[in-house]
Image 1 (tube, rainbow, N blue to C red):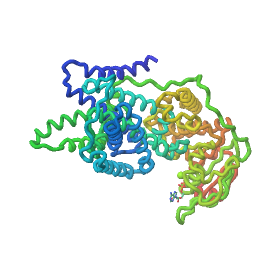
Image 2 (image 1 turned 90 degrees about the vertical axis):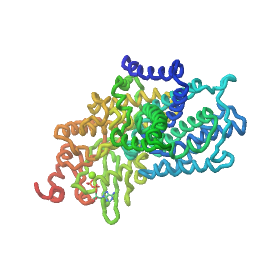
Image 3 (image 1 turned 180 degrees about the vertical axis):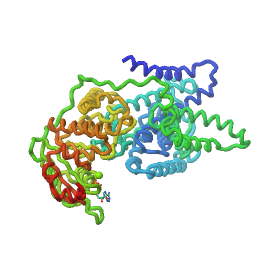
Image 4 (image 1 turned 45 degrees about the vertical axis):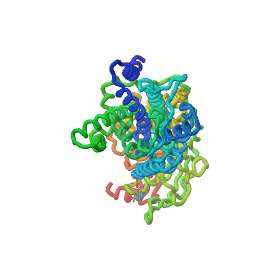
Length: 592
Ligand code: ADP
Ligand code: MG
């Protein structure tokens, strides 16, 4: 507990320092004004940290959303006589709707198409704002009323500073709450690729859209405040140039860290002001030379400090407290386990072709409850392809896959997870920067409900405690209890594979699918893995093991299916397979 409080002391100190800044005698008004602008930019940058740094969606167009907030309040206050405070819901609504609309189209773009998309609408809205008569074209709208409290106008920079920074504080707290929650982990899991997240029931498209809208809303609030600080709006602060500056703030500060957004906003805003003073004197002529410095800064950050500057500061701060595990949390509900010895999964003439290549050739077999079934075969035999058919990553070209009497083929990965089938990955897909515990908790995503808003407002704590307790329990179960608070990336490969099994167990699966769990493990690690799987079977778990390592499978399984060039050539008990001449010939090339 003491560690918990200690971790908050530096934050409290920073908050007090910011609050005291305008009151310090002798601080020039100009610096206080600049401080206000840092706050306004921080709001946008914090949104970008979540969108770009956490969600992996790079947006150059964020300034457009600032524009929506600003223009909405400008129109409502100057043309319809609204008071500035009263327009906040409308500013949020217009920005949110716009973000939803744009997000539905752009958030699903992948790779470089997404940033290109954001550049496209970033530019379009600049021209849109500049060409609408009612918005005053490129001159914009002026004569906006200031914020006022009880008849006192908040015009003084030393006063307006406070509402701005209160908004920043709220944004930081909401954003950090979100990251430390079920939905936040789902978002952070996007870094491990959407296949992994989807396999545990995360609706990645929806998670992306949610963070897209949230980031836009923060930008909208910034625009709403800006309009009444500046008392006028025009298109230029909402174009693509400022959009790039916001992105620089998020990247420079620390693209995965909420507070990094504030740091980046501070550095870029102060730097821009200083450069605008110094550079023209150095160069001897006016111009936007700071853009060149910013460009260099962006490239240097991406080259030298991918994670931005915040991690360097983080190292100097007291370590944040480990996540608290509440042993008294009500355990999550369990699904009814499958009956031992009864067919659980029936693969019926499953087929997958890639063009002319038949990767899985009408393969049939059955997995009964409580068994460990192995699928073996040399490289290229179609094991992974078969595995992908079972997990919904690929769609079968023909055949049926039935699970507890229901067709599985055609279901997306998420639907398969919902039915109680959990998997691990041949190439480990954990989020290296998240703790082992947090990674494993993603496995329980489908077993609780809290959404984005509940998480931000901390209404999710009871459910959160249940998820975390479950994750801790599964880590104890697989023997990784002592490593749960370490970053997943710091574990050895063997331990990471075991952590993936813990994550899968967190889903409360009826069937566990493992893709080459022994690949790349040392002998002792294989031994531990085999012990773990035997133990799970003894506890009633049903397991399908796709594996290259023949010895490993022989020792462990009840039933083996042998694939060669996509075709099942043999099936039976390990003893029968070990002596099957066809298997020895085909699989071992007759060497033994
Ligand atoms: P295994 O996991 O047993 O080593 P795979 O299932 O990965 O085998 O591959 C089976 C065959 O299908 C191989 O010949 C491989 O080249 C081919 N294959 C796998 N995935 C694809 C794909 N996405 N597109 C085309 N061919 C593929
Ligand atoms: Mg494979």
